Image 1 (cartoon, rainbow, N blue to C red):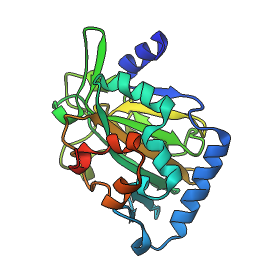
Image 2: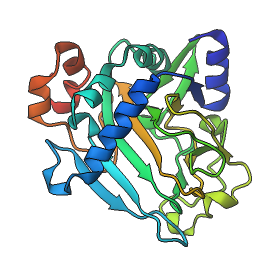
Image 3: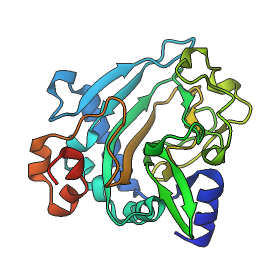
Amino acid sequence: MTEEQKYLFDLQGYLIVPGILTAEQVVLYNSELDRLLAMPADQFPGNSTKEEKSKAVSTEGSDILIRNIAECGESFEQLIDHPASLEYLREMIGHSEIRMAASSSIIRAQGDLTRLHRGRTPILGQFQYRFENGKFYCNLIVMMYCLTDLEQGSGGLSVIPGSHKSNFPCAYFIKGHPEKSPCPDDVPTLVELQAKAGDAIFFTEDLTHGSKTNLSDKQRRNLYYRYQPSFCTPNISGTKPVSQELMERLMPERKELLDRFNGFG
């Protein structure tokens, strides 16, 4: 990370890195998602799943969530240890041994949104952000690969910058009662991030985040790979360990990033 990137990540709680994926990779991953969207849910491999989950407030939109997408083909396996991404992840996590905690994709249609969640207060150890003695220590970093352009109104990742260091609970949601929280579109401090297809957005899970409504007529497509120090216990809602079948076919370098998650290490 450059000094500017360190400053911005510490200040904002997120970092946009242009061009992590090539144009050819963006085409490939969109084509792979087309294949998965056409596949019946009961035919998904290993412990991967496809779920339709409406998060809309007043429209008929419905997200499609693919869990454990790293199980869905060699191209997705390659992102487990993407060399450029790992350099950022190791510095942000601040621990010599890291592991992938989860992988997924969200395909967002018109009308969909994600309610706000997370924030530094109250402190949750499994998501904690710290900076001490010149080093970052993050217990969960989300690595988001953009497969479509994130433009204003496209329902992209929306954050309250700096909330990963707030001493007060987020004033815009009620913990445990998301249905009582205001629509993200109505939160004045929320910033809808903009990026190009192929860019990556790294953010600490301690950052208050969600997504404003997708007002466009285009799908918003992202891949999410989550990483944590190897000593942390995976605690991501709805996530299953990857399958034995995937572990058996992985190269040693990739398998090492999953061993402890699956109880094999």
